[in-house]
Image (cartoon, rainbow, N blue to C red; front, side, top):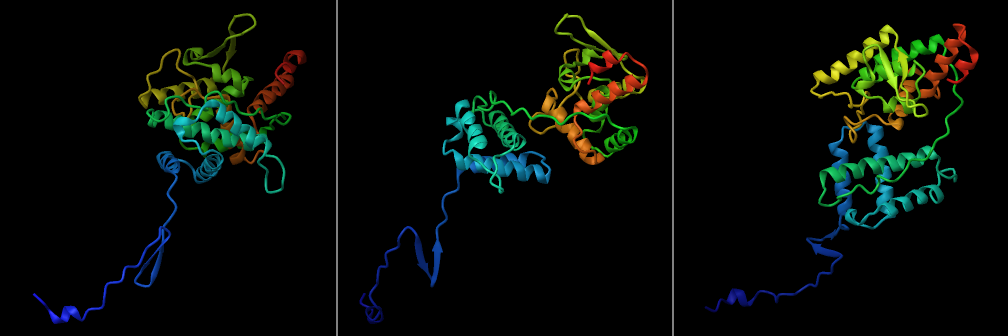
Amino acid sequence: MNNPELNNLPPIKLIPLNAETASLSGHTRVTRPPTDIRWVKVLEFLRSNNLAPNSRKLYERELKRFLAWSELHYHELRPRHLALYKEYLRDEIQTDAGKPLSKSSINAGIAALKSFFKWMSYTYPEIIATNPTLGIKLEKVPLPPAQSLTPEQMEQVWSALELLQETKQRDTALVHILSHGLRAGEVVQLNVGSFDGKLLFLPDTKTNEPRLVPLRKESREVVADYLQLRSHQGEVLNNLSPLMISHHASYKGERLSYHGIYFAVEKIGEIAHIEDLHPHSFRHTYATDLLLLGVDPSHARKLT
C-alpha cells in the first residue's frame, strides 16, 4: 500500500559510532576502563574481615600497591614473585620525604599480603592452591633498649587492659605471664599442657630438662579463667592446644605468633600512653624487681 505521507519522510541517515564515545540525545557517553578482576577479590576480602578503619585503610593501600606492581593473575603468582616484591619495597619505594621505607613499613606491606593470600587460599583454593607468601619472612625490627616499668606505669598497663574488648582476657593473661620474666618466643611455644594450674613448664633446648616457673596466685587464676573462657566458647582444649591464640581475622584460633605478641603489647602501650612498650619491657621489670628483693645480681642480669 502506497502511503503519500511516508514518501514525505526524510531519508534515514546512518551515523557511525566509535568505541570511545556515543552521541545520544546530545549527550556524550564515555565508556569506563574494565575493572581489574583481581581487585574484586580484594574488595571481597576487605568486606569479609571485621577490620578496624585504620587497618582497612592500610590493607587497601598495600594491596593496591602490590597489584600496581604485578600484572600476574593470582593463580600465576609464586613465592619468587613475592620475594621480588619485598626487594621492590626495600630498594625502590620511598616515603614522601624521599627516604627508603622503614623495616616496620615493609613489614606492614608484607603482613597485608600474607593475610590476603591466606584468605584467598582458604576461600578460593581452586585459584590459589598454595599460599605464595608462606616462605616470605618479615624484616627483623631492632627493639629500643628495654627500660624497667615504674609501679605507676604498671598500673597504667592494668588499667589499659580493662579497656580492651575481644582480647581482654587473653592479653591480661599474656601480661601476667610476661611479667614472670618469660621471653615472647617462650610464650609462643607454651601449650595448654604447659600449665598445671600453678606452674609453667618451659622446655630447655640446651639440657632437654623443663624449666619450672611458679606463677603468683593472681596470675594462676587469670590464666585458668582465660582457658575456661575458651572452653565455654566451644573450643576443645587438649595438652597440645596453644596456650595463647590469635584473634586476628586471618589467623583466628591459631597459635599466637611472636609478632602477634609484639603487636598486642604495642597496642596496650598505646592505650596506656607508654612509649616503646614491648614484651621485653616486662622481663626487664621482673629482673629489676628481683634485684630489689635481694636476688643474686648475676642471676637477675640473665633476665635483662
